Image 1: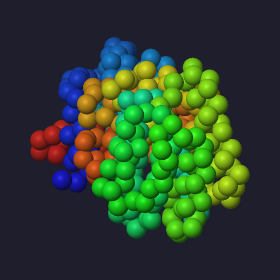
Image 2: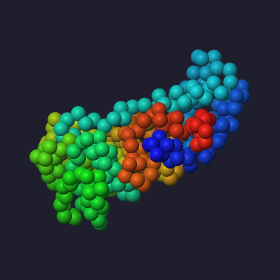
Image 3: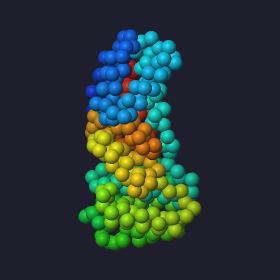
Length: 308
């Protein structure tokens, strides 16, 4: 099964509500005020959010007027184009240096450690030599869990004992990565809530270590979010962006939610690109985010390859 097919299947819960309602809305009727009101309601129900839903509808109004669209069937294609434009961004990881460094952050339970293992697997399949740093030294069994994923993915790993200084682990990971000729160093971190000052201070310390030990290296700060939490994921992202600065988002568990519209909300409200999305449990079910494929999968019916 291709990743596009997995993406379609993974978005099935979102599509059950959103696509069904859009099918009725874009049925070839005339464009009237009620059409825009209903579209905005459908988007909000899909967790696009009130603010962003209003923006989408406003842009569609303008496009319909400029293009001289006469019915909703034509407007549907314009909506697809608008959504793709809104979630476009620099989706590719910055791996321009050797090594490049990826720091993975987020609250407990979103799947950070699993995401790191899957990301390492994806990069290794593309010919990169990857080293993992187990800097989540506080959560029970986090180091062992990351070791399991490192073994599955075929990545090297640097670890200390439980309770060690996370910044020291990052330091050793950078040192080892340089010595071993790693292309990419990916560091796990402890789950953080944005209101825990000591944990945010620790993150700052890690950032300083990276800046000192790898001043010329490309660095990605990736926040892992759980798509099933919908607008709460967006709120988390805002807090982390303010506290730590972010270069990208990894959105997991899209296959377990009807709130896939949060993808649009996150990109539009944060201005931070989505780099990876996860649509399943398998090691290859995390893939780089493709806006065109996402919107196509969102609108495409599961049978007959007929678009909605």
